[in-house]
Image 1 (spheres, rainbow, N blue to C red):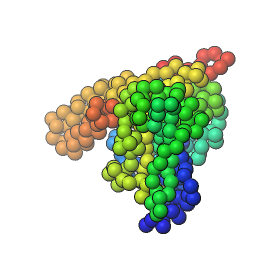
Image 2: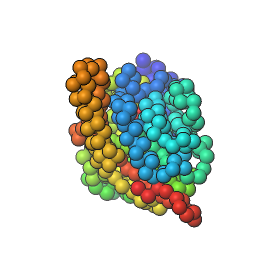
Image 3: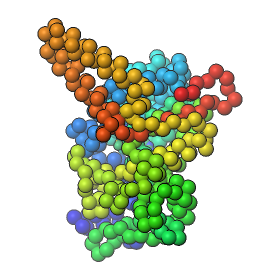
Image 4: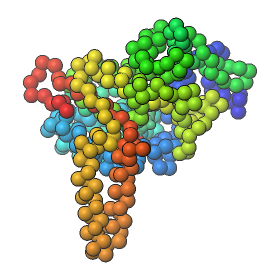
Length: 358
Ligand SMILES: C[S@@+](CC[C@H](N)C(=O)[O-])C[C@H]1O[C@@H](n2cnc3c(N)ncnc32)[C@H](O)[C@@H]1O
């Protein structure tokens, strides 16, 4: 096993944690997402909101229709996974509204191409036609490689992965200049001695979206919070792992065999959006889905369940009850409902009558 570890990572000296995370998740030969099966799903390695209920995609469709009246703006889902969000969301779109699925996972692209032939699949947003766009991302930025830093009396150290005999270990070195600069900008509230993730690549992805497109409406959903909310993280809960619906794997002993994720810093995402001229709103998934009409949807399901019960239609009654269970899980304040939703909207430059105002 140990020689396999080294064959995979193949390092002769220390590499920064973001480089390690990139290899573990996206290396073409052994990356968790790029070399393996489609990962999200009840039978996969972890479940996400769209995997819990297809109504999640339908509800996001309400927001999409508000920011792109008439459906003029193409919809792009970044990190589309199994297509569980895009499929029901696409059903809510206007006729002729272009749909794109962008994925770093080859297996995901193949699956989505087979179940949604009307969508255009792409390996990167640079392949998407420029112009105006609505972007949806669910649980993607937590999988974008991040550096790990520790505040010192004088500045920042960062974690590197190094070899110690046959094992991989974490060590700390002075932070690279750009990592320290990012940490200075967004990690004000981290006390000396504490650790945090520095999400330069997530910031860069958001920047790329705003620089590639003109009118932009982005809905970013993920676990995480403000710098203040994330300031109590420790070495133990800074990086999460998922495999076969379980957490807590020793990722240094099993590179590429487990998901690696960090809590998304919503302050940094919001700051990039504002710097690019967007109106930004941050709220919980529960609040956002309430805005999208989850309560009337729940009432409708309850009414259907009651009507089915009165008619003695047990199958319809059970179906409605299971829909309600899924929907309630999406707004559970101690679960998915506590996730953060950052919406960022920017009108197109120098053109009248355009959308993206929500
Ligand atoms: C945790 S999964 C979430 C999948 C899906 N959005 C869902 O909610 O079920 C994260 C996905 O994002 C993809 N991903 C990460 N960074 C990406 C990027 N820059 N562009 C496209 N896909 C990306 C990964 O390949 C992975 O499939």
